[in-house]
Every structure is written in structure tokens, then in C-alpha cells.
Amino acid sequence: MSNRKPGFETLAIHAGAAPDPTTGARITPIFQTTAFVFDDVDHAASLFNLQAFGNIYSRLTNPTVSVFEERIAALEGGRAAVATASGHAAQLLAFHTLMEPGDEFLASRRLYGGSITQFSHSFRKFGWNVIFVDPDDPQNFARAMTPKCKAIFVESLANPGGIVCDIAAISEVAHAAGVPLIVDNTMASPWLCRPIEHGADIVIHSTTKFISGHGNSMGGVIVEAGKFDWSKGPRKYPALTEPTPSYHGLRFYETFGDMAFAVATRAVGLRDLGPTMAPLNAFLSLAGVETLPLRMERHCQNAQKVAEFLSKHPKVAWVSYAGLPGDKYHALARKYLPRGAGSVFTFGVKGGYETGVKLVESVELFSHLANIGDTRSLIIHPASTTHRQLSAEQLAAAGAGPDVVRLSVGIENVEDIIADLDQALAKG
Amino acid sequence: MNHDSYPDSYILQILREVRTIAMVGASPNWNRPSYFAMKYLQEKGYRVIPVNPAAAGETILGETCHASLKDIPVPVDMVDCFRNSAAIPPIAQEAIAIGAKVLWMQLGVRNDEAAARAEAAGLKVVMNRCPKIEFGRLSGEIGWMGVNTGVISSKRKKVVKS
Ligand SMILES: Cc1ncc(COP(=O)(O)O)c(C=O)c1O
Image (cartoon, rainbow over all chains, first blue to last red; front, side, top):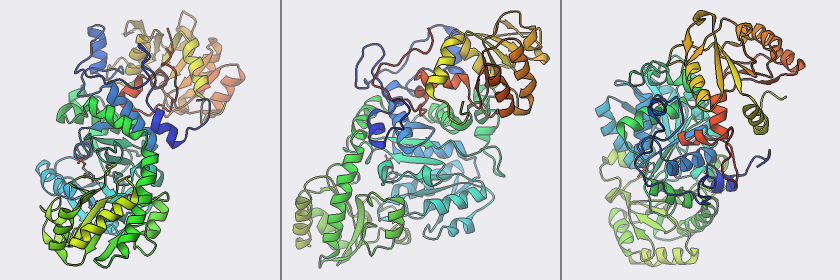
């Protein structure tokens, strides 16, 4: 396109893709191959040394996956992206580039339960120590800052509750301390929130959710904003600034500048840890992301109506949806999620644990499963499922107490969605 | 030329027209950024002639390294500067003197005064960019690294140079 800046809807369909140069195929083909031929040994050497751009082996790069990476980088307004096998793999790789054994990072206490578990237990085996912080007051991050801290991690819109983080204020705290802000933007998707515009340095997604959007492919992505100076601050990021032994002393930041984090995360993290996105999953996710703006609009409209219905229901004690005017996070939602507060939220049933279990077992249209961001409406009782590894104290902190039910409102007919909840609540 | 944002067409025209590039500050060390760029540009069909007084007389990637631009015995289309911003003015003067058509400064390098002088002498100027990254971006190759190229097109990817 000439010198027009393409809009989000255009990028969602076109960014990164072009007709196949050889066949003219309009849709990005599924490059279902593990490896790619070299022209000669010299070409192979250039590729292995990162001196040429090109494909070697699908653990590192694959043409279908690359289109998906560029698509998400464009939608987030980032410099470059790396796709991974899942959202958890994206988190693992991002921290692998930033952390050394003994380092620390600050994370919001309001996170997806699986992330709390990953950070609290598996990351400790690498010597990466998490410090959880209540994100409601951004200054809590400043107060918890330590000399060994290498990053701050938050979710823009936190799973499971409708908690919205003050990204701009937290990014100021991060930058004053010289650390990057990592934002998991899974629940909002780039259509609702673009964290880089508010100061995030790295954006992470579980693309399993709204981005792919149809509940058919696992995936994750890491987007680098390209604005963080890895060499200037008081804190050290040796994987980016020091010679890399496995690349004969190459320094990523000096060589790749504003895309150094993404290149290092691929060339070292993906190469050595191996959680690559499959080409078929990239293909399905590309098809899904084309309709992201349309789907998110309907998800948000439906969620708003369902939240309003539940907030008036006699068997419902409370609804935590930032789209409701009286909600604690309504003002932050208007700032960071002006197009809608997403479609995943929690509510409390009167009657606690037993009633929550009864509700999820009585629905007929909603699917009782552990996922979010599907076209289908989904329901779960976190305390008995996704969050059951957490202690009672962690459950309360994560907003997943015994009475809590989480919905991921789909894009079916909204009257049908409401009727299903109504009949199931009547049985509780 | 607005040196804060170059139209793709401007960069593309330079990359299509240029054949011989003098690379000032080229390093004989294979893990330095200049060596990466030189090797890549050679593979894309450019002749790249290294200029570096500390390596004069040495051979880098098959090309003899010269002490200064004036020592290069063949016509040069573009001068690519792997030097810091303060070192640019004399290089720009020499680029004008040897009849180069383009003065290119690498990522992080910018000298508006030298650029104005070169432009007044009829040279095209690019600052704070890398020709390897621009070539990779406009040919779509860099998208293989997940980089946001900013290119939107419903046409088959064009070859930048053939
Ligand atoms: C906010 C958030 N982040 C990360 C993840 C983990 O992603 P994945 O399941 O793709 O590994 C999830 C999954 O539920 C999530 O909801």
C-alpha cells in the first residue's frame, strides 16, 4: 500500500502474508516440512552464523509460522515476534533470555493460575525467583524492587477475574528501575489493548485463546517492542549484551539492535529449549486471527449483556466485569480497553463451592472445560479445576475463591447464552 | 529528504541502482556486524569493497581492504559507513570527491550536517538504517525472523535485485 498506514482490520488479514512467489497461492501454504535445503556449504554457514536470513530447520523458523509471527508483531505494533508451542512456552522463552540463575522478577499476583504455578515451582528449578505483588497500587512494584530483579510481569486483563492493570503506571516503575515490562495480553487481545502503546517492552500471548479464537490450536507468541536499551541500565542482560559462546562470541544487541531480544530468543531459546509452533497450528491461527476484530466486538457485546443479566440475578452474589459501570476496574478498563472489557470474567454464586460445582454440571450450551477465548461459550469453576494446585491463600489472592465461577462468553446468540445460565442457576 | 522516515520506494530505488558499495569501517573479524552486512550484501550480488586503515592490504571476504575511499581503483556507487556519527564529515567529503551517488550511515549513525552537504552535492543520503536489514525487509526475507516489515501487498513478493 502506498504511504497509507494500514488499519488494524487490514493488518489482521494481510500483515506478513503475500501470494506465494512460486505458485501464486493466495492463502499462506502449510509448509509441512522439517528442513530446508542449502545452496552450498557457504550458504549453510551463513545461515547457521545468522549472517543470512533463511530457513534451516523448523525448530528455528518455518515459513508458515513466520507469517503468523509477523502478523502478530504488526497487530501489537512491535518490532518482531517469536511464535511458540503454547503460551507457557512463550513465558519460558522470554524469561530464558532475560534471566540468569539467582535472578529475580516481580509478577502481579493477579495471573492465570497456571502462570502462578509455572513461576512459583518450575521456574525455581532454573534459579529464577518470582516475587508476587498486588498490582492494584503500581507503587507496590517499586516497593518490591530488588537489585537482582530483571523484569516485571503483568496481565493486561487478568485471568480469571476482570482485573485491569495500570500498564502505563507500572511501566514507569519498571523503566525507573531499568527493567523491561512484560505484559501478557492474552485476555484482551491486541484489538482491545495494545500494551506497547502504554509502555510495555515485551508482549506475550497464549494464542490458544482469542487470537486463534476457535479452540483448535495451541500456540504462544512473544513480541518485542524494540524500544528497551539492554546495555545502558544498571541491570545486566548478558544473553543480549555479552558474547554468546554458542554463536562464536556474537553479541546480539550490538548485531541486531532493536530486534535483538527476538533474535536471541529464537536463536538460543527456541534452538536449545525447542518449544516450536507447529506449521499447521500457525495456519489455523492465521485463519483465526483474520476475524479477530469482528469476533472481539461480538464477544464483548455478549459478555456485557451476560454480565448485566448476572448482576441482577438473585442467586448471584457479585459480578467482576470491568465493563459494568460500578466495577472497581471500570475506569482502568475505559482507559486501556476502550472497545470493550473482554469476554472472560468471574462471578460469585450464593451457596459457595457446592453451588459452583452444580452450576458447571447443569449447563447445556456452555462447555465445561479449561480454556477461554473460543467462539463457543465456556464455563469453569476454578477452585475445583484450573486453580486447584493453589493454596487457600493463593486462591483468594488470584480471585479464585470457592464461590467463583469463570465464564468465557462466546459469540453464539446472546439470548441462548443467557437462557442456558438461567436454567442452570435455577438448578443450583 | 525527511531523514526521520524514508518511503520504501526511496530505499528500494537505491538498493536496485547501486552495484558497488564501499564499506567504511569494515572489520576482518567474522563476528562483527559489518562483516555480517558485507557477507549478506555480497550474496545478494553487490560488490562490497572494505575500507579500514587498520586492515589496509588485508583481504576480507575476497576483497582487498583499502586505507581510504580515494584508494579504491574502481568507481563506487554507494559509501556505507560503519563509523560513529562524529566521524562522518570527512567520509562524506571523500564520498563526494570520488563521485559516489549514495551516502549511507548505519543503524545508530546520523550526521545531519554531513547529510546536507552530500545532498547539496547531488548524493542520496540514508541515515540510521542498515542496508542488510532494509534489503531483507523489502524482499520479505527478514519476515522469516518474525520481523514486522510494514509491507502490505496483494502481489507476489518482488525481487529487490536480480
Ligand atoms: C492469561 C493466560 N496466559 C497464559 C496462558 C497459558 O497459555 P497456554 O495454555 O497456551 O500455554 C493462559 C492459558 O489459559 C492464559 O489464560
